[in-house]
Length: 334
Image 1 (cartoon, rainbow, N blue to C red):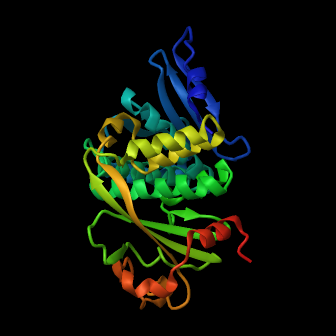
Image 2 (image 1 turned 120 degrees about the vertical axis):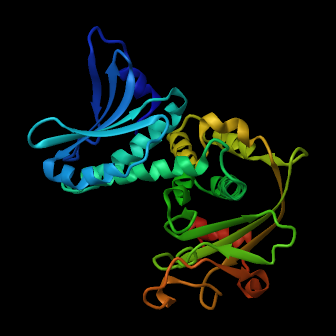
Image 3 (image 1 turned 180 degrees about the vertical axis):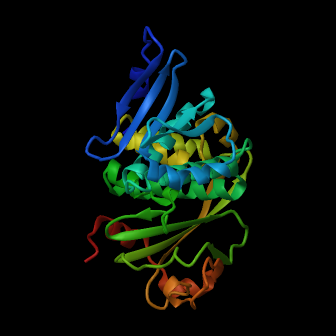
């Protein structure tokens, strides 16, 4: 795990120009380091690969757009070896750079020797897209609602019945998983809306309610009142309440990384004191046989990326309770 203490250790002033480095994943065959250059004390992630790996990665750099605060370059260090450098160039992104570097490093670690640089570049492009989608105005309305709903479920349900680390690890939505929460016994998809009369639930694709590979799949629907001011809870407030619960445990660092992967950037915190949310209603359903949904196995060949609506009325016979879901989460439903 890359943390601020490690960066600060590497930033200790040096008498000469050069780089202070620390190798990551010593058990891995890949040459992956975090680094601080001196005297500028610029933070970097360094990944080395063969000339064959570079041949796969270099074409991707041609169409790579610039991103404020970040720089990526690839250069030869010998006839047979290339070094990919990802550098932090803007101080306000320091807290974003750490999870970015760790995520890209882990992606590289799990790559083959031929794809290590290519996969790192593609993951960097993923982070670029995330940062562009958030922009200077922060998360849009629907993404704020969605993140608030996920965090509320994490705090009010998972953190109350699971150990800290297990609860935070279960929050997989920021990593692009099919459901927002994934546990050995159950997957949970959380949908959040502020519509006055939400007759339908929007499903983003054919995999969100696909229960293959999991014993139980639960759909949660939060209906909120959204307004500026008042007695409701802001996005910042639910974040802070989880931070109090996780404290200085290892789960805290994981939680912060997942927040940033969701697009909640520390330097934009002031954008999220408003609006405030009050819970109006919660719907809980078990996704099982005869549940009205579209899944990947039911689609004709060549058809995909299907967004669709489910009528709430059609879900009545699939209802479940908080108590039943809690038993499933704990693995005591038998």
